Image (cartoon, rainbow, N blue to C red; front, side, top):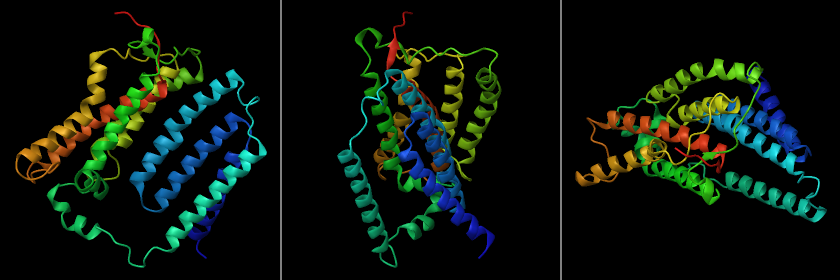
Length: 314
């Protein structure tokens, strides 16, 4: 047995054990730490499967932004002391365990019953990959062959931020999301908030730009930019912008609107919706990616900040 195989077996065992521990542990903070570690290990597994694009997304969302969101939720639950008064009973636990086992069995059965030669559109995608001028096959598929899905994903993000903002009271509708964070100006968090964002911004922009030819793209770059933004907010070095600002709302709709506009131009030109002229395919896709990285960064950051809580007057 090779060293690589032994490493993969150990990694899978640690991942399963960490997943079980994250479920059964009683403390919110411990469960959150376990979830973040779980996300980072899953990202490592995706790297082992040569799916670097997925690994970048998993590390940024599962190990980064998702961890920040859960840490905030754990802090609020601790302050409200909800866990002590709302412990699930034995029937609820047994029902949840049975449902989880049923879903796991259904997924395992679906994998086992797959045909030996699974139907795929990969040969057709490879044969027409030249039309976009992109060397990264993942970006090629997402922006050309699955362009409708990619565009609708950004629309879902936009609808999500509208839903979160709708929870705000009328007096704070155009105010600042979330509480104002205060931190020790000489503490570790403030130090990291001054040190990491310049590097993180460069890395995020690079991940966006290199996504045309190498692993990366708008979502991964946007998640990194959102993480850097949230870090400065949590350290008290910056504040969330008022939701009534026009420039903020423009950024939130920039990605979906440009995507839709390019799709309509393709339809009016007589080809098809979301079709790109071969000579302009790469510039158009890169333009959409630039607009989307701004939308993704702003949306993810504001989703984690929460609903407007503080009124703001110009």
